[in-house]
Image (cartoon, rainbow, N blue to C red; front, side, top):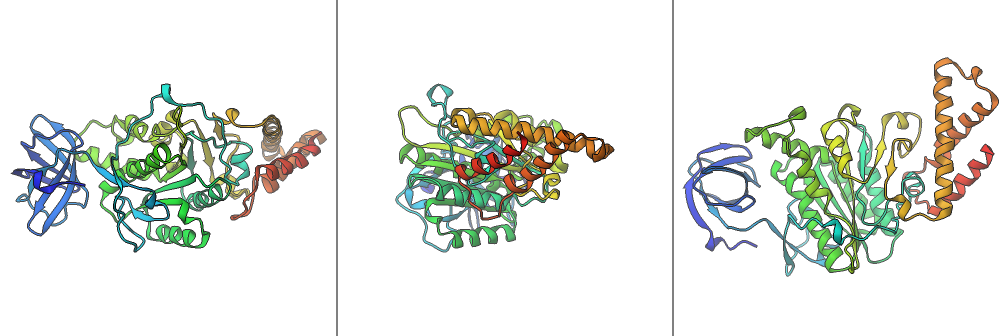
Length: 434
């Protein structure tokens, strides 16, 4: 990784404000990795801001116990990670270090974690779907290989459980050259325990890589975790020919760390205190997906994030919506109606769906949307002024909509429906609308 002996020593720190330290005269470039030398050892950091001769450095391991007597050494290198197919089947920290009790991964290929954003000129148009086993996704908002589509959720919903279900079922439903990279950001202890439990019980861990960043880890790690995970995904996809699904989040946790650091650096902030470069920063993550012309392999992204106060116009979901190619909306309202997963299909959308679906699926999904929307319209009227005011045709649409909620959109936690099964269920219900 880093050759510490070639690093050059500079003056001591001028100020410390966890996890940022400030130094002068470093002669470094933006993004360079530095070594902070303490009496009890070394810590790593990265240059995240430069103003004239002032250098702002994020310390990966935090600044606890650090004094201004510390010395800075510049490596003149960006952050890198060693990637290998041996990462498959492993559970790692947000920095790529073993978290499963197994030995460190060695003999890998060193890669800059910032990767290369794929130019649209070299991308192929997606045309294959990924079967997740979830009807509201596969039938109605199809996930397409090479697509980036976000999952927005009301606070408190079991999004992690749904992500783990998608992780397992997408692997079971795909060929052997399919893998999942999961990046958990700001996970609680209980969430980490749940993930370990699911992976142990599923038996599909050998086709996944998990990067787990805890809410107890230094905040800097949260910003590195998605980039490290995507670097592993890019290696598997573009150099080893895998179709890789990247599940990552909570992106709201990531953005909040970005906001806090911007505040500590005294940067210009805009909506709700987020930095003016929030769009650019998130785009540098989301745009690392797609399929390259003339190469096997693909990267599909499904970031998930919480909508604070159920507000889809909050800066984080709002910004994500502008970059992604669709969204899945999970709401407490749908959960209260007994729909599980609680996806609001009328506000969800996959913009790439039409490239991958058959004529039959396209026809059935459009009929479902039309019938469901009609039922929702009449149901809203009935909730305001009573069911008695509706004619028989309107009441029929309400009953069909309720049956769709119960039988089509809802499914068991571990129920892995094939697309064929989803279409069959939808057709049976639609017969009643004729």
